Image (cartoon, rainbow, N blue to C red; front, side):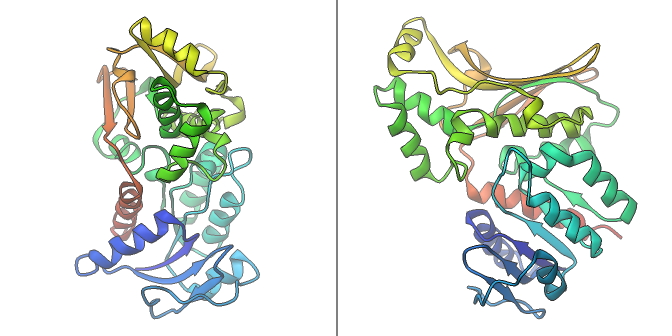
Length: 320
């Protein structure tokens, strides 16, 4: 199948490497790449590796028309307040009869129900496994392996940057040095404030609730408080009590709908939510038929995020 990539950052480059590695078994071909910084590369027969960029085409519509692909892969950066322009990119692809895969949590956090319904009405696939846990099988697990199970709530530690900052301060470093360390690791959002102020976690919380609990919410409706008020002094006091801090995303069904929040919570070090260091992530699901169970992703990186996109592409390629 032919692919049109929108965005060519770390994840897209890792995906291109993976596609090349698995070409013999999964013959995907990248026919177009559209970027803000590098311009646009187009070859309906398949782009070379590395791609050669020319001038940027004037619109996403012009790019998708020129790429002549069957699947659009939306890999632009998060814009947590609106989910744009990624939402418009996805709709432009649907309008051209293209399936869509995205790793961008913004569209899922802001417009999941509408996009899902548009894809269904057009007979198109819409996949987003890498939007929340770097490619760990969260959404595919529910869709494929847990029939009739209802999500009653969830609790997760889903933002790596906040953990790096907290761990740095626990070791005596400054907040700013912890954020700089996270940037060097390449794990922050384009604007690191999205991580430490809780917007990345709020977007993931909204995305989970929208897909698994039909919440039809947005990040702005998630009660959010980040870690910016934490100091090394306060964390030392917490450590002396045998505790630590994690930025925790929580969702639960209530009599009036779904309650969602993100908070820097003081946790016992033995608490399972405190057990994942560094860039590792953890989510617990509370359900009606399966009780509580969890998914842990140990030190994921860009290759794991790219694999989540790859798994979505393979699933779409199996659609009759």
